[in-house]
Length: 300
Image (cartoon, rainbow, N blue to C red; front, side, top):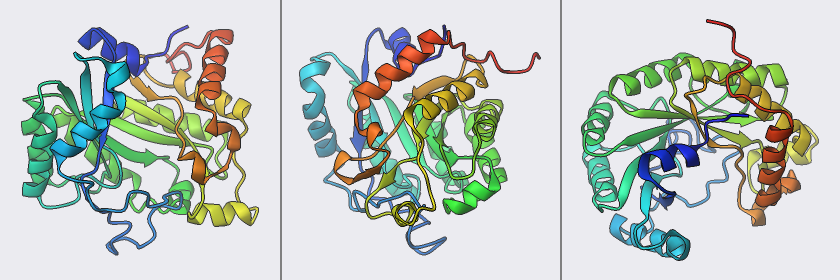
């Protein structure tokens, strides 16, 4: 059995567990400010709004306080700009945010979640510059390669935009992590595996898998309540996850096996709210099936 987990990858690099510190950049999103749309992607609940929750040093201190009991005094951290489009704004403002997040010596990595259509030349130059100081990861919300699914979720850009962004980030030396959603309406297991294989072939360094889940207050919730959308059962999700991992090159790091929203807003599937049970079931299935990352790829 083999799958290239982030925890083991980081342990091999830093000698122990590395903890994420979620930060707010205060950036909005072109899918919400009227550039592309006003309501965001269909699954987005807008949680967190757009205002940064204090300056970066204060946010870092608060985030560290939440994990210090388990992290210990000598822990290393990933400064993670998580919500919305964190490269969407004036480059001088972005520089100040990023450099403040990277400044503490215990911060080992800067991770920035964004959209492929929000990586202009000045931003790419900044990311390349910062990457020479500490590793920079850029997380791209691709979700799917299939046009019908992309249109349904209101992604707002076509696949070649992702291709150009991934290539530009690789050329800048930046680590590329790509998000994929499993269980999008109308997608078969083969469709999902095709997306994973495409991500691996695009040169992505890492991947995050997410379960399509329905949160209160989203447009997806309205479709689910109207019976237009069905969510996956746990066994089906695990089967899709295994199919995708078998189509990933062995060097691609798997940053996340599943993702869900806040339990207070979760409408479906309710099983996803028990993260420990879900991860235990996934790991048990991997052992049972002797999962080998990359085993489903064609011979070179």
